[in-house]
Length: 538
Ligand code: GLN
Image (cartoon, rainbow, N blue to C red; front, side, top):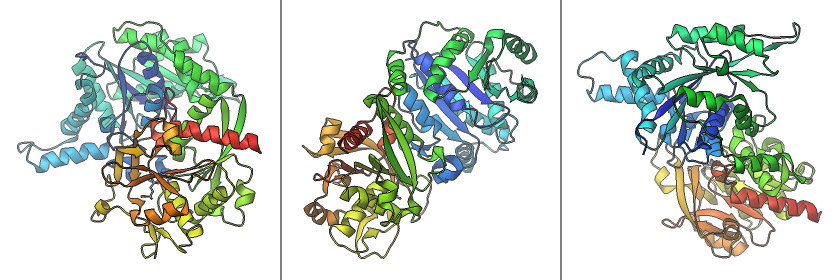
């Protein structure tokens, strides 16, 4: 139980996409490795109540927490680095802030006062920031403010930080400002001006940065650091360089080398020791020194964008390191895939993962992919929509239930092998109304999944509206596809597998959300192992 929680605010300047989330997660890792309990929170300045209603093209993957919050993908990094679950309290948007303030106003809780951005919205931001701190579970809370300083939308957040720093007092709240020091190749020079301006913009809102973390493509020389310190009112040891890294998993060690943890702890008046990073470093070593490589196909419809399947790609990195294998993930656009070209597009792969997704676009290609890997004994992992496609493919091509489908794609199908869940039928609102968060699942003794997980009961995170239609269970099992994971309360089918196939598993949940550096997910580890075996048998 901690009574004096310290707060670190991370703001961003100059441009977006500098990797505030990775810096926050890396710092948290270093503090955790010195025995502090740490959590990270992300404040997002957009008006959506959560990113659940955002297209992955807009905002990347939607990450789901144990308690069923649909959140920003940065929370995935926090969990993967820290191996500690996050929750709804770890991600707050402007939409959510306004929603609670407006609800209070409707309930008459403001006693006739005019409700304003300051103090009502800023008070709500401050309250949300302190929920985690007041739980007593954390020595340190790192709050990442989304967006870039100077944006209209982030102003109330910066104002809340200004007030909070004042309320918390010296050594209890500090600000790390992440900026860019660009290199002008024509001039052959690194430029500090954008950082100076960005720190100035922050100061116009009354917030002095304590530490600067500067993204750069080249090492920052001493005199440049001194110049930045002088112009930006920070001590010389508070100018930290964050040089481009070949992997995000190098960033904690790069920050350690720069002494970010030390200067942070000094400013918070906390003791610093040598971080214990044995497990972490072992992982990094294995990741960077693979013994062999495999090619996995990722079949989806958002394949142009790295961030759309973030957690899946990271889970492959963890599982690859566990197997000492480099996993090359080859994106295959499901819209361009069909029964005729499947051999050409997928024949060389050692394993195929059919991705989660929503809506009709690209699903016939996913079904063709499943058919090809099922018939050709290529290891297969289907996640959520990917599992549903496996069931549809089996119904159509093995059970000859022609036009079997999910009612999501064809509401009038004769064979709705995937159907809307009973409790979903009356729901009208789209936001936050799916089956979300962690649910228990009982594994069938002697099934593949029971061997892979090496336990009988698991809990995994969900995000879907449709499910395996149990009316077809008998027929499907008789045909050779087994339901090997069931919800112990409702008997909902959560996992299907084909025992005749070397490795064919579909899961209704999202195993990728739970894979971390310290705990690579068993299904991904097993899948990579199976793909390696497939490769070696060729
Ligand atoms: N669209 C499917 C459903 O709602 C699958 C969702 C997913 O893949 N996350 O059930």
